[in-house]
Length: 574
Image (spheres, rainbow, N blue to C red):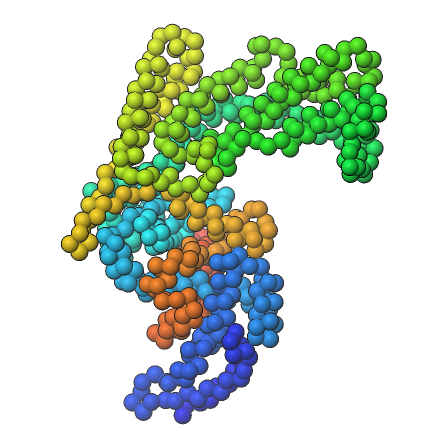
């Protein structure tokens, strides 16, 4: 016997206990023998068990629980009140263990994908304030995250390294789906020559719409901002609310079973104040027509302008009917008409109105593309969760035919002499849009891929959008906001290791079955990883590329590179 080590161990199922471990030294010089029973419960040189690591990781990263909620749950189950910082450290360890488990299971994952005929590689990245980027590689058939890495930007070098790694680990994909990032378009052809590369229809349509609508839409946005219409309406509504007695008296009017007698008995001035207030509220709180897709599919500023159009029409009509009344009676309504007129003067050549007319024409053209592509449809209730799935490959062929017919018609219209004279800017932008469509035409439509599974032939068609990945990124960010409530996630995305993308795999039943059998076996799988050599927290952080700059700074300070370079420049001696 070499020695006896005593330490306090905390686990979720067994609670806290003092472990006396006897370590034996073999006669022939092999490594010391530790207790296998203890190694199955807790990592080497650690006080907290694998089940606690798994629990903290799942609660923190998969379910987005707050630290206090996790602490309370642990105390309720095991009686141990662990520090908040320990919860975060254990959750971080969970991600690193999950990454090691995923990497050790690549052979099983690859075999499982081969039984389905292969995999379709989806590439995309996400960031907050541009640095750093989390680039993920997902199998479009199974929905599994295959690989993820933190990079500084979507540059050719980093993207090529990632694609070479994926190629080495998982083999050649059946097809590749990405956005129109320059690095993806250039590198994919180098790393995967001959493999079908399709661009995401949603990204393509979104970029097309932004280029086509942005100039007019930005002009409208700036005009509304410059007019300060929102602030003026808010100030006017508060003034009217004060004249009507404030929140309590106004609410009391509608607390009655029938408030109609109140408005019948009210003075004319008071009625017009209520009328003006309702018009303002309809502008401020009225429901818009947006479907949750964002610009260029939704046009919130145009919808706001249309509310103003309706409001000023109503106010001017009411003022005509109230013409015989004294000016003091309709003072607030006149003020409202003055405020609205800052955006909508009675002038047919008003620049804002001309911008809106041009924008509506462009939206009509772009909406037709949406209908043809069957994407971001106004009738859809799925919003950004819509994958753009089609019933069959025949429907994709029908989309191609309709797109050919519509682009041909637009091209003829844009080249007409009369149309060019009447709408020179619109005609020029239409030509640019058609040029963009033809540039990526060969990457928009793909034929079914024939694969042989056993003795049977199967057709596989790639998903035509990357919304599968976008949805995964939104989940990561939503869980972050659930934990701390902050809108900005720059610090989170900078500090989270790349393994955060793998957490979503734990909701994929096929992945769970292949890698660990059931989710309950995660502590056992983590302990088996440590049988081949444990990782300390220090080792884990050294391998985390998100801490690259900080680690490099520490090394620069240790060797004092700054002074070394200075001495060399001054004396030629290092």
